[in-house]
Image (cartoon, rainbow, N blue to C red; front, side, top):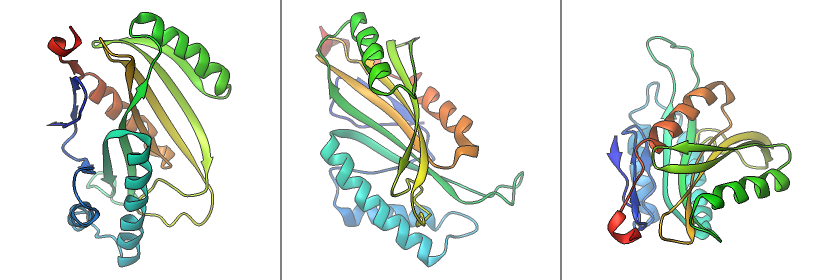
Length: 209
């Protein structure tokens, strides 16, 4: 796994297979990185799929920057020797800094109650990670444009996403770790990816102190 560079008193690692969206780099640099990764996929995506991926990533870049994302990465997966008929698909992993009224264990319980009221159809719960308590939220949402980089959508689609809200010690803030995909057959793999990332979370105790 690779270290993620973020402007928060914490660190985590993401699988090497993810292509980072660098918010400090130009759109051209990020586009070239994406195209390079797409050219490594077998079978190679069509020119139309590559064009769709580029446009979708540029849109994500703008939306995530405005939302306060400190990390974003895309995962491409497709046919393998074990499953040669699998279709090309993608998932989006993001980490967003969000404000919090509290900076202790009460934060997650209050947030869980609030999220349960706001999103009655979502699954909400509190868990304890190695890094501390966190709130889990799983929901499905109908969106006009898909998160699948390699699809032009063809209309509204259902996106499933998992959020892990982790309070940051010493700050009235929390980190929102999230993974989203419309490729529901790969959902279990996405959940394990996010769990793997969360297991690597560490805090800069000198800053928190």
